[in-house]
Image (tube, rainbow, N blue to C red; front, side):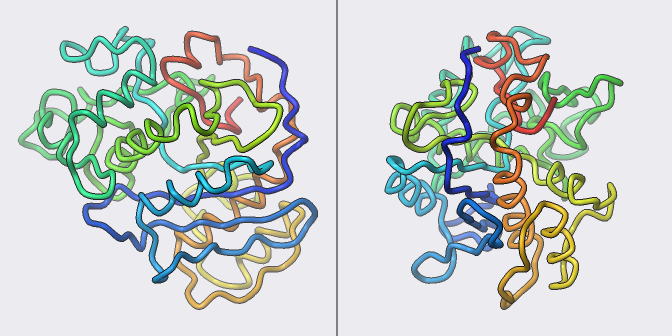
Length: 287
């Protein structure tokens, strides 16, 4: 991988994403902070509720800015272990080809991808007991498997339950397809000398770094959010009208992204070979 100059970013955004059906999504939250230690603030769209298309359009207006933006969804499906993203169906040789494939085969509103998963349930995706044995669908990307063999709670093939990331991730791939070539996307693109960059984030990493224990990582009060922000080197936040998981995850993760963006080790993790990077991507913050 090429060397990076990630200390050039002066704006930091974290986006808590949603794969829900429909045109507007209360599950999407966008938080932004600048250099320094001021707490991140929420970016509120016209009408008060984000659409996925609205996030895309907003990002494109920022593409010349020194902006590092993190999305909380998986940027690709597992590939390395089986040599295919959707074995027996796709011949996608890299993640970009997968994004194009998902977009071509999805016609859901607002960049949704629920129909893509539903059309392939039981073959590639688990949506319930009728699809077979759940463990047969549990396959992970390289960055989702720790050195001790433990894995993230869910995979992009598991599309049921509160912890599932499948719907958001495949909807996100449709967004990435539209960003591709217009804004750099790491690690598929190197860190550019100027302009914006998009990375994959995992809000639980920010929560762990702030001292929140596994299983109790959701922040739902003003005091708890300020404590977590302080652990990232951030000043207290301006009061929010509502303390839901989406808003607090985005605010805390934006602060964490600012605090860690210049760490060279996070841009060159040991397990991220060029092959892994191009086929599966990587979560920023995973070593």
